[in-house]
Image (cartoon, rainbow, N blue to C red; front, side, top):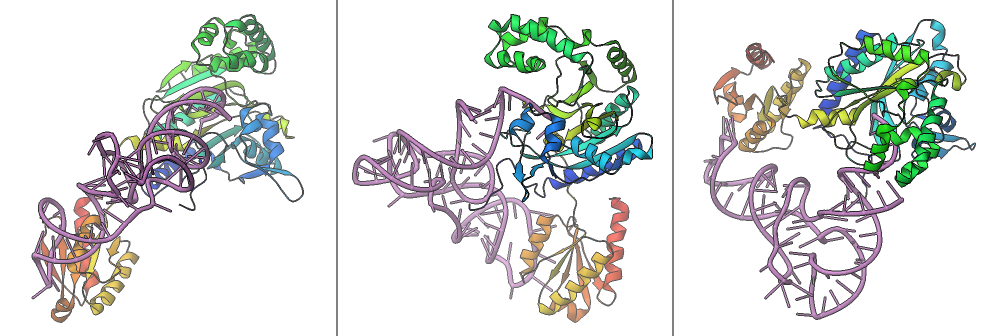
Length: 426
RNA sequence: GUGGGUGUAGCUCAAUAGGUAGAGCACUGGGUUGUGGCCCCAGCGGUCGUGGGUUCAAAUCCCAUCACUCACCCCA
């Protein structure tokens, strides 16, 4: 094959697109009830925007970005996530001057140059929600309820909310230092990766799956016991707000997210059914982000839903009823083909789904096609019918055939289709 | 970047100790000169991922390479 998709990129084929349409549609409905408005930002931004917000030490920025250089030598990058772009748009367009909180969502593709595997692609799609202008914790709870409501609208089940607070610039450095000392003291028992992490990014050791490291982490200092007073109050109030959530909630002190801009609340919604890539939603608070890229001191919180992961969960369930064409138009002979072609267009103007064969084929072949397409009924018209002035309409399930006069055939067909639909209540 | 698995027809998969490929589904036509689903018959369809090597002979053995896939890492 000469041309294929790029590794980690894929075609979304017609057997899958109905799921995407359903998810996007119900997402828009839920967003409306929470007062979130859609924003669409470019997928290409100046590289510096992502470097400064996500953090130069993160995997995303250090090795996963699709970056190119423009004719003036400036670095451009395909967005690896949406929050930085939305924050940039908020500042550039002065949206915050409208007062109150800004609630925005966006849906679209993201790009990360990672090794693809189940549930992970180089081009993938996210549904993003961002709330700017409130320090919480009520807005934290609202954002989490929004995420839960979206997944509920998608009819996903068996999900678990994982929740943590990773502190703020006031209390995190102290905890980080304490953890680092603890880990370095025990570095003999850590795996090679974690020895390195203990120095560079000690919080990441919490994520390690090596047994020896897990044991050490069990006894390690926990962030929730080292939060400053403000962070502790924030977190406990949030937990009060979300106690009625209809989903298993796990307080997970090991939940450390990979983007530098997070403060206080972090959360993930996970499933057991997707293999290693178990996070369907990831999010958190980012109170310093807007200021960091030259905007006002505006707090924010948001999340991203991985659409491919949602689709994978939806497609595991089957039993979706395929839509069926209203009528197959079967014609025999050139005169009948031309006449019935026009009827097909007229019926479509009235909103009906009409199928027909394009090349001249035997009636048998046309009936077979009608059957394969799942058509509810077929119109049969040939030279014989043109002579007698009566066409045939056949019910494909009961095999019952009736004659319909050619002189007001459209009305006859419409009432036939409508009549049956009234009973079928499609 | 690191490891494992898999590459044969449009799809799902066979092929015995090396002897130059087969089935089901799908598609086309016929049995039914103008009537679908079931059945029967026939047909269409493959540079056996690619390149090289061993051999009289390679889908099969060896080497390389590419692709897909799962996992590590990290994340949606």
